Image 1 (cartoon, helix red, strand yellow):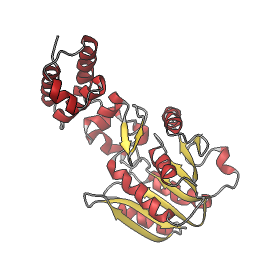
Image 2: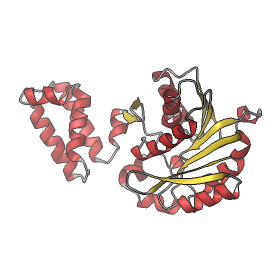
Image 3: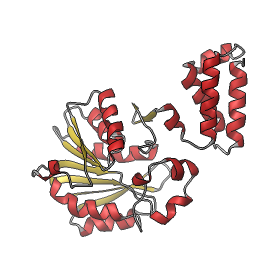
Length: 284
């Protein structure tokens, strides 16, 4: 039998020894996840004995986290734009940087009603669903090549009660027959794969070994999907519609030039909280 204090102390030690950057925080979050106890309860009862089943479960999760499996893949919880999303190994974990993309789209949507949104490479659905929740009169379509990712998105759609407002399609970009019926959108938004193939193996362990490679690999120069979406996506945008991309921090100039070459106007870049280019957007 171990006390909660002993479990947490040992969890921190194991994660720290495995090179987990935020070992203390992750050890605590896993304990909170397993026991359902908040910090206030813990500080008042840390010397109490933990339930044996909870202790075994916690130790197992610590072991998995020490092998650099992302924390969110273990808890299946990720928070984005203030909403909770289910995630697993089939989708990228939503990142705070991506909130800049959603916030930029919301600015473009300001003052407009009944908008239709196309989210290309939707993954967990966090971008599309956050926009729909922020704009209750809007509807949208999320597209992904991965059937496993779409299962995650469907789960989030149910959890967020968006079944009647969000369509999910399996498609290699714009190949789905459902997209060939002449429909057009007010917003085309995407966080596509943008890591050059040769750079993937240089990424941190959590990313290169546990994120889906399909969601990372932007082909030789990382710009493959930007080229395709800029040229093929134009016909899916209404006049005056906006195309918005998340980008790698060194891709701003190249993606802006691709958009301008494809005929988009008012092309702009926006930085993230670290001062790095994160979003490129323009009007059709």
